[in-house]
Length: 212
Image (cartoon, rainbow, N blue to C red):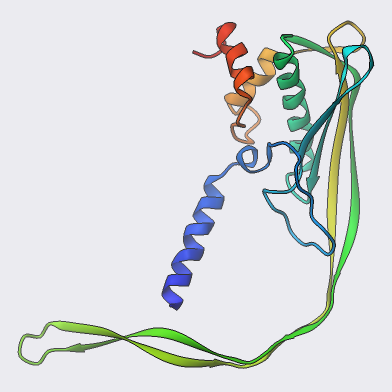
């Protein structure tokens, strides 16, 4: 049983290592942590957008501890490029440039005791046959007592990174090439991994010969 759990942990770690920042965190924002919380999750955070006046869009990205501030700013720009291409525009203007803020939030975890308990675990027992010299193994279920464990109270400081910008498709701010931004994202130029782009965006990239 213990060996199985160790193997399971190793497999889980290898999966996490193989997943890039973009694969874990570039997504629509559908879930946020609830107090108290600690660490990070690929289910939390992501981008949101809303319409503004004059055909403009508000783009934002929120992260809970992870990814980094740099990644948050970058993913905001990638989503702005995606929204532009979805709307049929290859260029967009940052009518309100990216604004990045970070806030801290402290979580309190009270002390608790994990009660002592009996658990059934499977143990391997091996013997060697005297006549053939072959190793023979069998498994037995054994009862193992785990004593009570005290977990002290603790405080955890978490960080919330939020990036916002507004984009339009007429003059009124710094101009960006949506095709170039999306292409660079697929080529992993920023080393955050390759995000999964909207199928409509991929269609625009193919239309303009950026990808095959």
